[in-house]
Length: 328
Image (tube, rainbow, N blue to C red; front, side):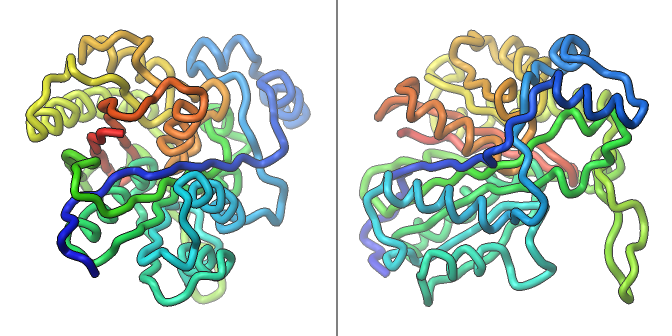
């Protein structure tokens, strides 16, 4: 690899959502058939979510990831054969193995480059982006594809109103390219494994049987408290590392979990909500896909422009969190 270029830049982005759009009213009607009472007003007031995309049965994470990847590659103007690295962030892989990244690589018709998955739940894309940046900076990859993709509808308990209204399915991707000018300016990754129980899906398959609880479970209040605290600290730390003030950020692209968290975080950072990319109303919480989906949305509608400072943040089960600061 060419080690003369020691930085990575985001050269393109892409996203893909399942065709089926489920409004709050439609979801409330489906849940009512199970005797579960909710409403559009209840969901919007507590989360800001108005709709979500849900994959049909049989649609896999690798399929969503592949379509997002193709769009990102086209946006970056490179061929799949030019990729040295593919990283997929997901908590809902197609299989135990091979990795979703290997399946995407096969779908794209690319061979030879490294391909692996990263599992950090809703922080997954930030973790994967940081990992890919490290490969590029070390001269071990020149073109890297980073994807966040989920079919979270597979692991939801549709009898649990507290969680099933929160999530959606989708995929987002970016292409990182080696550059002699800095694009990814700084990154911080963290975890606190002692907080595993506040957000987890603790089931698994062993000896041909499902053991434990296979559904997503969450302590919403604990997650809220942890999220706003760690994301505030992480944002300030990554900006300090890059030598810029929080007030110099053009855009904040946080994990799209809940509009209350986003608004509270913006207030703590003294950032106007006009500078926060919010897509949770359209996509709900898509876990590892939420940050790249929001990033691609804001790039394509013209909000995020070349040269701007964009802070991407993730927080999720593990308990994991992190930030990546990029100059677009």
